[in-house]
Image (cartoon, rainbow, N blue to C red; front, side):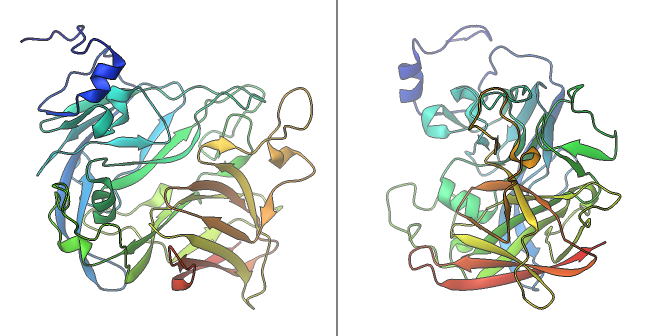
Length: 370
């Protein structure tokens, strides 16, 4: 049977979701010309981490062939049409756009749509925000990952960062090329020092598995995560290094509160299967409330206790300042850093046991405030 690009293969959404088939080259329905597009291939190879240990990684690379980990940064503005074409190898695979929730065909969840053997172009458009409206807008920190044998494939490395930037509203302008806003009516931040931090740990047993391990119903231990290596992926988004590398964070910059430059934005993406806790301290180990929480999972923290526009908490008398941030798997936080004066500060990332909560690993990042 031949299906035209404008015909529906399934009679209803229920019928569509119940047919969990693998398809060679699914058709992208209602195709529109993209504003942003990327070609995502899959590679698998040994990569050396910053502690000198090599792990076999299965990850996405872009059309430039940059075989790096994590996958390439995808950056889209609200209202733009995005196309992401996935070319699986040793398939099937999908690409799930975690937190964005497009329609099922473009959400990349295999068991509610399809798994891809050949290629498929995902299409979606983030919603445009409006100042003061807590129900509109898609700006924030997200990530993409494979949703086939998800537990194993994400641990093997099939994920990457995804950022949705807000449109510029005339009431909330920005200094072009110097600052952006986290969301349409949020505070400005410094583009040059914007930083991603993604905790990630490795259970080396899993990295010896075949990509289809456990899919036939056998128990291979994917419910028993025992990490032995602990990492902080990421760095300054404007200065990501080149090919064939693991992008890791060991030190970072932050602009001093009240200085000439806008604050530094830290985007936390928890790519770890265990809980983590960030603590900010000075060089003496004293806690410093220098992190201002702005949004969580792509949703801004807003003042909702009064009538009228719901302002960002940043512009109220009670900004959400803290020295400690706890997060679980797949959680994302956007936070401004406000070191009170020039000098050296520290970010301590503690990895905790997923049942007992004991600290099983720690990584420390030196923060230079200037």
